[in-house]
Image (cartoon, helix red, strand yellow):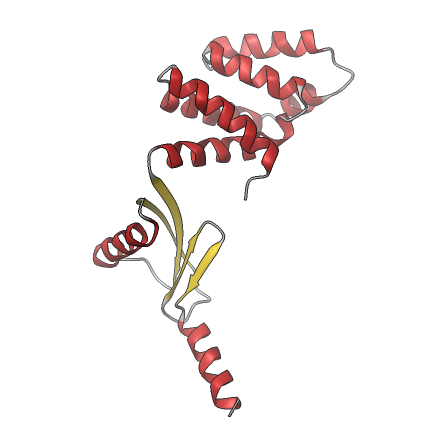
Length: 179
């Protein structure tokens, strides 16, 4: 779940990206910069260290922008994140940006946990069910959870629909134990 501050920054970036018709390009650049931060831990330390002047951090970002490459829109955005001390939450900003774009395009993301790989027929039924439930186009990520006996769990946002056999057996036991 994304916290409020990264969400606000992501929304502002999305507004600018939509206006410039650069939504997908910005998302790709965010991912590239995220990968860079992930593979060079000392870079995050340098960009967030309070003793290093902002002008030095700006030069680092401008040099990186030539190599990655990054548009001026994203360079400016990263500099604002550094200036406002939000850069440590960059992964949340990236996630929030994707969520904002999904909302703009009428897409809902869901997670499905099943005991085995989901086949095409079940995938189509789940796509339709999620779309009917939410009124949006569904993007579903599938996960194999070997702890499940059978059935599946569906998560949309913070709501979980648990149709696993283990949960159903637990409910059956509870009902049998009560009058």
